[in-house]
Length: 218
Length: 218
Image 1 (cartoon, rainbow over the protein chains, first blue to last red):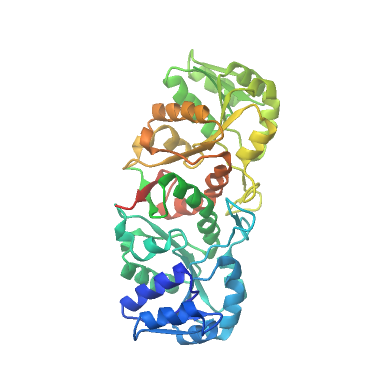
Image 2 (cartoon, each protein chain N blue to C red):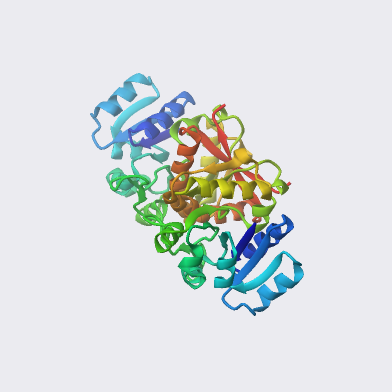
């Protein structure tokens, strides 16, 4: 599949590298197509990997991963272009974390709204699915490194888009029964508002290599 | 131990009943000491159970559980009285959920602040510990009903207050190693902001009888 990964940070590089390993044709998009991070990544990852602008990547991809910083996502997607996003599955991995006032970070949007809802409103023809924002990059693409199976929530308005994402998550190593469909895109509020707890848990656990597993009544 | 439980809803009654079963002397406090919920509860629970106003309960208890609705907690604690709370462990179980605009509910305070911090600021001599707000009432006092051990976070400024709460949680059935100390009272932001995700998970799981278990790197 042709996949666009927008964003050249740890999350973008980790997901893009995994997708190349899985045999996809991946275009990593950045603000500057000649930027060091993106050209280096493309050079290191062989034939399936290429570099471009946000617009190059979005027009090439059949599925688009938003791995930009949450506070910059709307402008990155604007640069990608509404026409290039129309009809496509847009996997929103970003968290709207604002560290400018110190720890714990604020969310730049929450409670009555979420980043994923903002994205869905700004790009109504994209099929937005929130996913993977509840774990760190290493866990996203290698959930089997944890000591037990754990859960990964997704949400969005489009059922077939969620199915496409669920299949990609299975390819990443998430068991099908551990992909939890939380329903409509409004559930992105909860998935994003989990981040302050995630950060506190990271402190208690001693690092970012963890996730949670839902335990039900026996 | 003499324990006050403020609030006569499901959470207050469930915790108060469990504490009586454990042999504590429990005073359930309500706005109206002659109210049906509180007098009925006291009559049903025998010698260890008594009913009173918020002030009666807070003055009688060595430990105080705030099980009032989050949006009413500050006024309930005001009625309980700062002098009666001074020096005492105040276990804040409440969530500042506002359902007035429908589902998913808003939090009446979040992001830069939390209910527990508001309470700690309003009653600086109380030793506030956030605990138990991340699970439903039945799970709070019977975590063993779930199919696997799960985790219960706590936070607060006072280490010995957290130890007191951890011992009570162990009496409720929480394994000591599953009581996760998330550090300072600011972590209550994350514990409260988890609620929208909890509600979405409840929908996916099919009911409130669940919790999460932190899974670490193997």
